Each structure stands twice: as structure tokens, then as C-alpha cells.
Length: 278
Length: 250
Ligand SMILES: Nc1ncnc2c1ncn2[C@@H]1O[C@H](COP(=O)(O)OP(=O)(O)OP(=O)(O)O)[C@@H](O)[C@H]1O
Ligand SMILES: [Mg+2]
Image 1 (cartoon, chains in turn blue, green):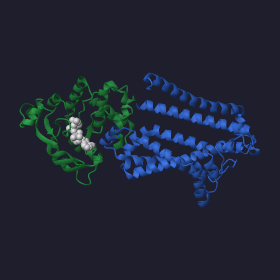
Image 2: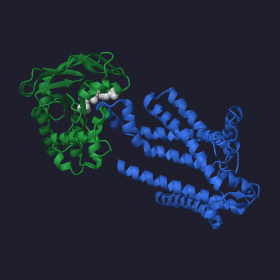
Image 3: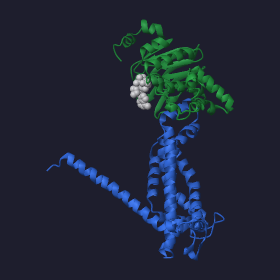
Image 4: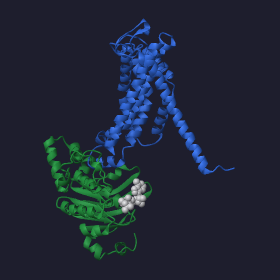
């Protein structure tokens, strides 16, 4: 028997809207759950003081600092490298074997579990290069981890800049590099930014790779060779070792708010840029 | 005097020959029109004159194009320098998504460091030359891509003449515009002719007849006939030209 197309249409719309609704409900549930448990713990003191008794009491100041500094170091390495590679792939070499291999490699790298990156970073940076558990080891490992994302999103962003703008720039006597700098890159910024924000999110949420490479020291770092603990790692240790669920939720709430804020900022930036460009 | 001289120019896109042994001279401070049916190679020939075809993969070019008596296809030619002197206006208006001012200033900024005052002066002078100044003088910081289409195209011409090229190549510059805007651009071309050599590709034969001094008729990659526009449109030598301009094909 054939189902009346109108009926099947209605069924599909219902199913799809239910699926969407369910996804939203789950998302909200998680956020509300974390915030309701965590927000009561939050106050200025929690954010601005050092933990004591391994985190059972006191605040999370060094883990906030650790999260920021690690993410920053990762970006400092990954963004120039990734955007550079993307420009090279999109503008300087022809579509062919090389681009395919690089792209395939990037896609494979993007799918590798972070703990493998952690192990790799541990062996290469911590042990072989003798950098120890440090911001540098952790930042470099994170950089490797997010590099594929940055390359691929930047490459798409660079490619999406209309050919006619490059053509006219060249026809006005600009060199290829001037054209890239003045026409291609500015118009690729929203896309590149998207990749960077995804990477920031991934860095902030990472635990395994960081424990392996940056350690979990609760002191404020004074150099790039100091070990740090990020908020995610702190949350993991607090809950895993049953030190303090209360402070774990407080940390989680800060993380969730931070991620929401970053995404909102990203949304706002993208919106402004795209409005200007179309 | 001729500004550009094309000798035995042939061009292949891969295995397809788009230009077949073209010989032509473009006179200085004259308007030359290239006409012919779709796909006959007009744009291809035009883009050979500032080496824009170099950007396309798999293009092979043989022959000579002399600009000021120097072959631009000779090895070692500075293509970037060439394009400062031989500029191009495209079929679709293509201003950058920048302000009106930054659009006009684009080429200038690329070519040399300039004080803001000097830059402003040239931007104003260029906008005046294309008749846009009165309309846009209060809109210099507005985004160019939001202007009406004909102003966008005029702005593209402004952006080009700001760098004072010697030759302006125009590839169907009016095909996206209405008749009133088209008339404005034609008027402008006649004005620009005093300073610049212009080569225009057009599908609009009235346009070719109205603005050009010389016309070339192309067919399947060949330049069939080249002569004074008056002659081409009233008494062409070749029957194929005759057929085309009387609308019997194409
Ligand atoms: N990039 C390219 N690769 C392969 N073939 C091309 C390319 N560009 C143009 N051609 C072919 O070369 C021929 C001439 O193209 P060209 O664009 O110069 O024609 P045209 O006279 O400008 O036509 P139109 O009036 O439609 O613009 C056409 O047959 C076209 O299909
Ligand atoms: Mg064409």
C-alpha cells in the first residue's frame, strides 16, 4: 500500500520537528543542570582566590589562568601555521595530488582521539624535547590538535572569496600577495574566525591531552615552562577523585558560561562582518 | 599612432584553439570595438592585451603583442607593471566590498605610499572625471556594493582611471545596465577617449556604431575584418561581416 504523500509529508515534518525539539531540550537540560548546581557556588571569591586542600576549598584562580594561557599559546602556534597552510593550499598550488593528500591528512588528524595527541605530545615535547609538563608542551600539543580544523575552515573561507575580486585586483596591477592581503584575507576573516572559535572551544574543553602534557599544577605559572591545570582538568580531578562535587560544579558552570560567551561573541562578530560584506 | 599591436596571435585553451592568427593594431586615443557572435573569442583577445589569460590554467599563447613597441609576451615581462598601464573594466560591476573611497584608492595604495591629502585629491579628481562626484561626494564612506548597479560600474571605471592607465579594456561594460545608464557610460567613453586608448567588446551593434572609431569583426577565433567603424557598418569588405551586421546570423 502506498502512503498518501500528504500524510507522509506530515509525518516527516512531525518527526523532524520532534528530533529538533529533543536536541534542544537535551541541550537546555544540560546547561540548566550544570548552572543550577554550579551558580550557587559562584562568587567573586571563587573566581579570584587560590584553591586550598587540593581544591576542596577556596577558588579556581590558577585554573582560569591556566585555561587562558594554554589556549592562547595553542592559538599563537596554530593560527599562523594553519592560515598560512590554507592560503598556500588555496592560492599557490594547483588542485591535484598534493592538495588531496594534505586535505586527507588534515581530515584524518581531525578525527584522531585527543588522548593520542596527548601521548604524542608527551613523548615528543615532554620527554624527547625535555620541555617537561609545561604550558609550552601543552600549548603545542593543543596546537597540533586544532591545526586541521583551522586549516580546513580557513581554506574554505579563502576559497569562498569571489574570483572576480581577485581578478580585478590583479588587473589593477596588484601582485598576487597584495591581492591576498588586501582582498582575500579581509573577506575570509569571518570564516577563519569560525575555525579559530571552534578551536578555542576544543582547547578549553580538552582534558586528556592536557594532563599528559601540561600536568595539573595548581600554582599560577610564571614561565612557559611551568605546569598548569585548566578548568576542565580541575573539574575532572575534583569529581573523579571525589574531592569536592560542589567546587566541580562551580568550575563547570564557569566553563559553560565561558563557552556560551565565546559563541555569542563569535555569532556577533560574524553577523557584523557578513552584514558589511553583502 | 598605435598603442597596441597584435601580430600572429594564437591562443589555445587546452586543445581548443580560441584565437587563430590574429593581427590587429589599436590606435592611440581611439575607441576600437570588437564585435562578433557569442564564443568567437572577443573576450579572449581582449584579455590577451593585459595578460589576464595567464591566470587560466592550460592556456597556450603564441605570437606577439606589442605595447609601446615592447612585446608583452617576451620572457621577463613585468606583468604587474603591464597591468598598471593596461587596465580592465569587467562585464559585471565588481567593486570591492569596501567604501567608495577605498575602492577608488585601491590601485593607488597598491602602487605607492601616499599622503591622505594627496590620495583624497586624486579620488575626488577621478570621481569628477566619471561624473560620480556630485552623487557620491557625501557617500564616500558608504559601502560600494550597496550602490545602484550603474554607479557600481561607473565606480569600477573610476577605480581604474585613478591609476591613470594608458589603455582601458572594456568587456561588455554595459550588458548589466539599462539604456539610460548605458548612454551615460557611452558618453563617458567619448570623454575618456581624449586621454585614453579604449578597446571595447560589445554585443550591442548600435553601441559599437555610436562610440567606436574602429571596429573589428571576429568569427570563430579569427579576426575577419578590421576597419573604420563607418566602413564596417555601411560597406564591409567581407560577406560574413555583412551578414552579421545585418543580423542574418549570430
Ligand atoms: N577558460 C576557458 N577554458 C576553455 N575554453 C574557454 C575558456 N574561456 C573561453 N573559452 C572558449 O573560448 C571561446 C571564446 O571565448 P570568449 O569568452 O573569448 O568568447 P566571447 O566572444 O567573449 O563570447 P561572449 O560574447 O559570449 O562573451 C569560446 O568557445 C569559449 O567556450
Ligand atoms: Mg565575452
